[in-house]
Image 1 (cartoon, rainbow, N blue to C red):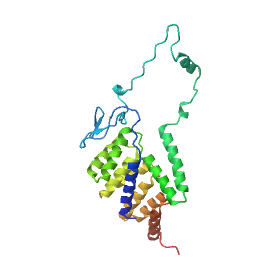
Image 2 (cartoon, rainbow, N blue to C red):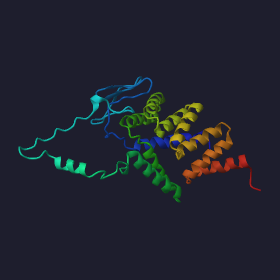
Image 3 (cartoon, rainbow, N blue to C red):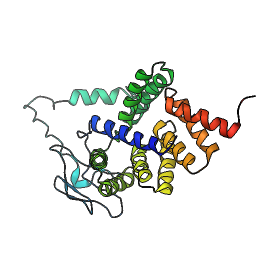
Image 4 (cartoon, rainbow, N blue to C red):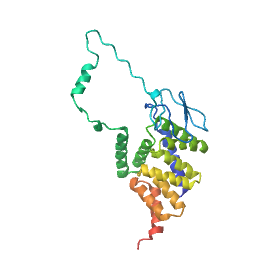
Length: 275
């Protein structure tokens, strides 16, 4: 495995990034970014220092880790007035609710994060069991599309801009956007992964290694990050550690012939030929 692998992985991820829809319909407060320096908000525009203003699509409401501000809370719809002599609309239902304790336990309602984890678990099981290379590739692309959804309107929009900037070889803009993404959503593995790829291709090996460590702490099954880590370690002459990273990538995604060839080559160099 050589540097070319990470460049191929970058191209694949860019293609997935363009194919994946950007989530722009979720609700939340207006942008309250915490990166340094923080982004400013103004109307329906997201402003990041060093970049032109980013116009949010109609209806999109950017939000950050601090949640909505007091002035950003959606207005409650007015209740209809009750007719004289009649009960207040909905009163019977509210009274019934009070008389029926814990009809649905709060913990029984799945959260978005729980649903996401369930989808990823199912896809990873299919990926590991796939016997056909083409089927495995299709499942891998589906997993990458799930990875590309942060749950934040702001982060998804910035990621779309960052992938477009990388595709246009505007690495300075891409890095500025990715810096904002990892500050805004530090628990989103894909933000760190994309910045690791950008740093790797810019020969910032230490920066790429640091970002990949973040990725794998958040998502240990990130086969792209594992392969990238193996490539960096191999380039650095750390063959034993590179072999371990490649093997972990194969354990998650067995149908990777290039990684398998690298494992076999490194196995001979590290462990010797079978007698």
